[in-house]
Image (cartoon, rainbow, N blue to C red; front, top):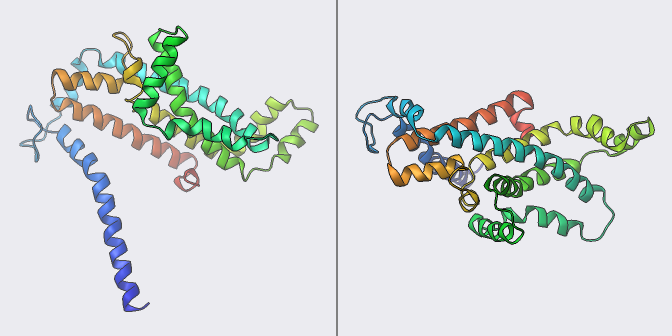
Length: 265
């Protein structure tokens, strides 16, 4: 390795480490601020304390918001796994013009600003007469979780041998049973990856949910915004740390079940 190569390698390492620090610093600051004993955001904390985590038990409406968010995330993820499987199979095996257009249409919500998608969904639901907040939120969350599932499964199906499905059908299985017994087990890492990302995307969604909630159906991010307007104390950092912990737990589950190396393939 020449001197020039060593210099460029060192520069690459410095840039890479700088990017990691830049991305991780807000997370570190948020977690550190959640353990402060001060009633305001102060770094470094004057004393380390769990007071803001204990205060979450007395937050009005927090448990209801968490339950709604978890419910929406679970239901929308399950529905997206079903719809994403059908959409991915149609694009991967279908023989019709415009397959790529269909794939692009399904992932298009990720290509547009969330606020634009939220306004569009709000107008659409009002036009068709859907005014129930829960069902509006559920459909909205399916719109944002389906792209994660569909694209992940479509990429995995590119290397899957569909002749195994055909062989299962010749042995007497119906097409749905062949999918359930052959395709899904073989693409388990893709299902897990897509499902985990979809769940996290639903739990953390703010720009779409803000247009579809009402006084009785507020997701956790919207409830956190309300707390921020009413009383901006470090309890918000404690809630954010909880969401960060959720993401870490999801990654650990993926690592223990299929391995991180398979999740990112």
